Image 1: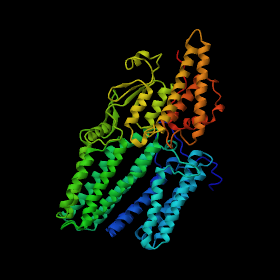
Image 2 (image 1 turned 60 degrees about the horizontal axis):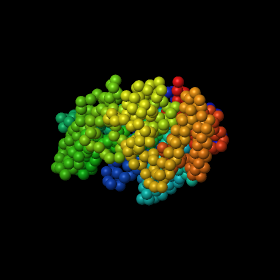
Image 3 (image 1 turned 135 degrees about the vertical axis):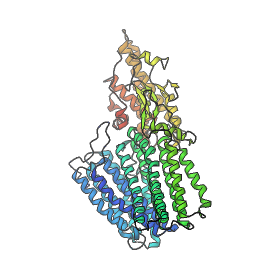
Image 4 (image 1 turned 60 degrees about the vertical axis):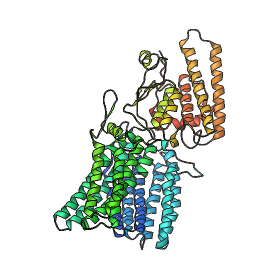
Length: 633
């Protein structure tokens, strides 16, 4: 099936400015995982030992992983198409087999668990190869890489299922580790290289909503457990107090995630250029921590309802306090990734929970449950204090609602290395037909930094630009504190200072750094020559042929040097496996030369540069940050 490829295109049709809707069949598919989460909480409740905790964690990550991969697939494929629906129904059946085997996965049903899991992972990948082969070459190769990694991990899954129970955990841990590291490595293989997040083209709004729905699944399971347990109890004031404690804990957990963080993250990924990079962390790795916290708290809820009075056992202490702390830690990481700072309210909540530990053994289960609920409510109140839970901006561009609230909540607890958005967005001035404006705009998008674009011309809008930049040139970048930067290299240096060290688009170590600076300088230099050549031919009454020929010679010479250097380096990008400022500068300048000086270049003479330009210009961020060339009047 994967060899021939589908004749019809089953990919989602993207509409500019609209988020893809979550289809009913996707919600139907999620029902299997309601059962899976219930099975996991019952597994943990049955075995509250350290071994039970590690085994439950391994299966939880596996369940999350198989659901999450399917969420990525339905982000790309249209669930309304019959073959895609058929795939989801097949995955549901395999998911039921997986879920029913959870209670005895480390006993007599290990092979059933492994076969169901591997069947879902590999089967879904084969379907994607068939669906994409004739319609999306880049994503097809992405799934070739994914398939190779899953085939490798599948060997360990099945070997673990066949092994004796005492050896099963180690083999399955290796299998899961293989799958966890592969996205971080871009699914690199020696035959096909690595995938780039900029080419994953994730529909951000859909991915954010799918992840939020799984959090609701986990919270719903917690409510189901509490309700089912309370229904079997005698209605006394103590039991009613225990039930209310568990209910309000679930409500507070919902508030902590949904009232600020989820909406802000939804906004960020919907507006970002490199949505794949955000989805890989915020909606692939981090949510499993949240789900783990919810499941552990659900176990503590059942323990509190079963025995609300008397001294608390160690199992209840670590599930109630540890589960709450785990959930807050997951939210902290999620919001830190979104805005670059840790919410102070979450740090306070974790600190209070830690302070409870020495006294917990002297408290009743009901008292511990009530205390952890109060902490969760306190975190929610502190985070919501004094602001509406939505993201809006006033006419001056000031951040209001959730965005402004999160600025305040994080103000006293900055973590070095992350982005630190201010109260105002930056303003990028200039038209995108300028290679210098364009490279700054692309960098802003790739870094996920909010900005307002003012497409002013240095000719037609000189007075507007002069109010910010006395040189009356573009690009001009007005920072969120009102300071103005007037040189594109200075702007990129500033943006790099905001980025986490591992995401900076100029290499940090030598000799790569000065080599990247050299390539970028050559590219911007040839861009300046191309601008000068255009002005000479367009704006001067008497054209200097000597100057024109000098500019042409300089442009051709620099491009020849860049071509030779690029051909010698090979690889996907100029430096390393991630896009950098050198890549952006060269491609932006080539676009300008070809637009402003049609016929000047024969790109067949520069095949390495032409290949880079074709590949990068096809990326969503390069399509967004672009415009047709508008000659100055």
